[in-house]
Amino acid sequence: PVNQAPGFAITRSMVFPEAEVQLTQLATRFATSITPGPTNEGCVLLDAFCQQQRATFIVEDNSNPALFTVQPQLSQEGVLSFSLAAQATGSAEVTVSLTDDGTELQPPGCASYFGNDTSAHQSFTISVAPSNDAAAFALPFVVDCSKATSIDAPCTCESPEAGPSCSYLSETDLPMSDVTILQGAGEVSIGNFATEITPAVGYLASFESVFEETQETVFKTYQGILTSTKVYAVDLVNATKHPVTNDPLTRYASAFVEVDDAAHGAGKRVYVAEFETDSVTVLDKAEDGTLSFVDRRSDNETRLRFVPFGAFPNFQGTDKRIPSADVCAWKSVRIDGGVYALAAAGCDLLENIQETGSADRNTCEESRANVSCAAVAGVLSSAVGNWDLRARALRGVHRVNEVPVGQNLTCSSEGCVFSRVRRGAEEYCNETNPTRIFPATFEDLSSTLGAAVMMGPYCKGS
Image (cartoon, rainbow, N blue to C red; front, side, top):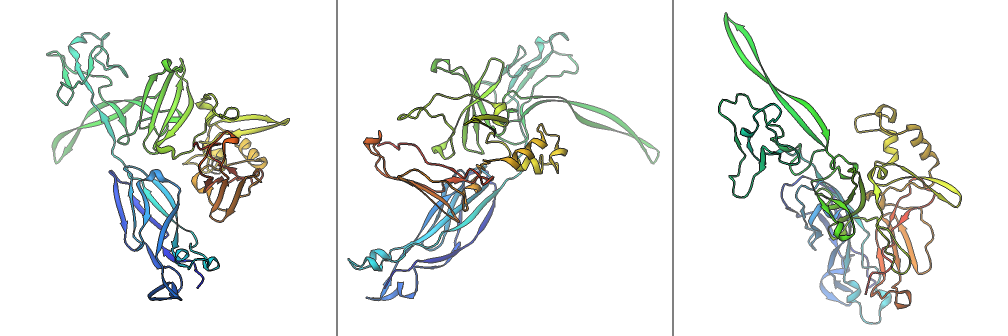
């Protein structure tokens, strides 16, 4: 008998709360109605016309692997298992198929009976909803206010340096802050005593804030008896922008470090860790404190990198430094005598700016954003290329252009597949296998120039 495709049914979506630690999940009846094909492919008593095929699930794609420490997988019995990464939120679209061993069971020389051993692809979504993390702060200093004997020498912990009155806790100190003051000093105010004040544990604030506590005695008379109550209030004195975490490029920073890389041919650099995106952003820091984008790396390179290319055959160019103000700004480029406007990726989509302006406004005009709403509308109406680089834009049928000989680009409702033949020594390469990338294209929202295609490196190595 000719082999026919297996089939199954799955749950289309699952929602979980954010996990504080790595959390393993099991869904025992996630896939149901699992069959290797028609009844003659799942027989108990075998003969020439009745087979006992085995079907195995294959995970074809995962749009957000950083959401997991153990990637989703389906057992033959339809049990879904995966481990969520700690404090990771977002959603992942997972695509699976079911394949049987019917081709292997056919008699030798019966290729016409091979038929179809793989089911149609089916997708489901795993979503992790964020939770409201507790606020956090640190008390890192040992303070000696006996040195502050006048108004001109206040007892304060300078930031980011400790200052003359304060020193950082060492390994030999007790695991708590210690404050020393003079006898009879009266009311003592210690500036910057608490540090790393942030609305969520493990994340950095974009502003450095100073608060002042005030108290007031309120008198009330109840049934002829005078009572008093002390009312306390905390007022914001001032808030200054943090020189690093307030930059648009570091809005998701969970930690950062400044390094002098002069010995390696670079100046001062800032390395910013982003727990939520599982990546490290590399920034150049100028003498005036201006930050410039150099690179972004992720664990196992699971995220796109925009790196410079050089000449054939090495294709490795020199680092480009992009001022952070330009990453979310307009640029222009001249091609064949025409001038094109570019809006760099990494910012909100133009449609979002036009339609909502910001998260709490209805229109671009109401948002009072630092953007010309008329210019946004004008660019959208005349755009010849508007590529959406979000994960969801990898799916669906895209308008694509022809690719060179030796390369192939095919699209379906699930997305586009890019493939090319293996490159050999005559092409300054020595690849072992051909290249296949799925999904391979980002949608062009203007539907003019066509989808952006990910073709991979020129040479994958030996």
